Amino acid sequence: MRKIYNKLIRDKIPEIIERNGGKHKIRILNDEEYKKELLKKIVEEAREVLETSGDKKELTKEIGDVLEIINYLVRVFDLDREKIETTRQARKESRGGFDKKLFLEYTDD
Image (cartoon, rainbow, N blue to C red; front, side, top):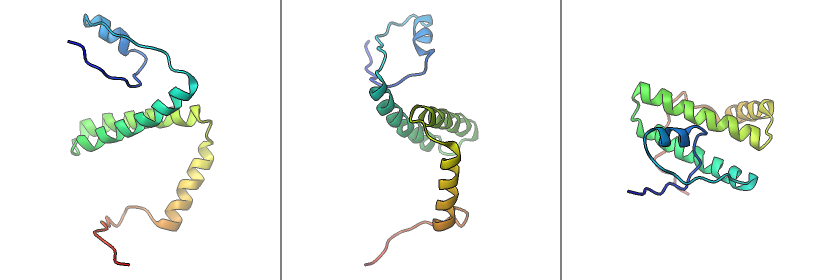
């Protein structure tokens, strides 16, 4: 039975599919498609973090996947890791972190 994916996959997935007796159709993305699909992939992986429900083993695996995609985004978009860290620190300084466990229910204008 055919299952449609239409998504960026890891490099060894075609081999794994074949080893398990499956068939597939893949194509190589151009640079612009690749960038777009990496951006979509970070959302997919973030959703998978949520779906772990906090299970430590699954959470570790899924956060690893998120970090993997972040590393590719940094490389493909030619981002400066120092600038990312400086920006992260500045945002934490101006907006705070998440240590206080604050949950915003509503605001009134």
